[in-house]
Image (cartoon, rainbow, N blue to C red; front, side, top):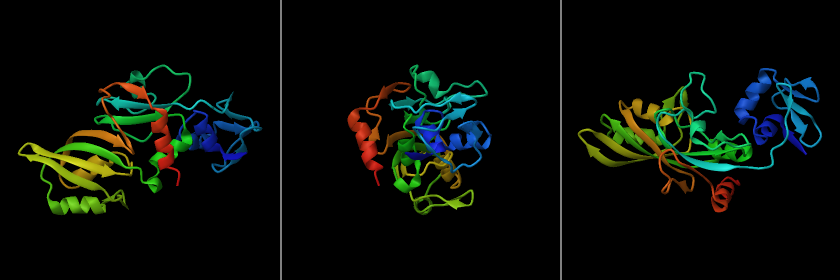
Length: 240
């Protein structure tokens, strides 16, 4: 069966598809002894010998799915060159390598999924599948109905319009505004930057839902395995 090389590396727990492309570009991947230069290369996952940094890659059959209630002050990465705490400090020691599904920045908290299922990760994070993420956000500053309407329709960030969003004011006080925000994109610091464009500064950001999954009673800093039903729900949701 032919499969794209970056997908094979992702399914094998080596790296996400994006990171796999970087490894290929850097000349660190070979197939049958030949260094790969073509990012779109397809391989026979049963017959071809794939190596990364000279070590053979074997396809990973045991898929793992975790949910973490990420606290603020942790990097969503497997390691950090500056020595800051990462989410791996909160997770169990596993034989299989797992990767975060999407982003939550250093200051943000809440629901984070992790898995070694590369195909599901791709589908959960690609805007085409429109997987809803829900956040509770507190901001300093004023936000009127016109600004909310602009954000919901999409604004220009980095030369590209953000996808439509849904924003509801939960509570407004002299100290700030509490919002419920639904998006299905996952650009870097997207919500913070959207609100900054309206003159507001985010003081609290928590993801409370990812697709059909919520945090439930999972406490900050705790993790758990997804249930078979939850895994099935995610796969069904992305089967388009």
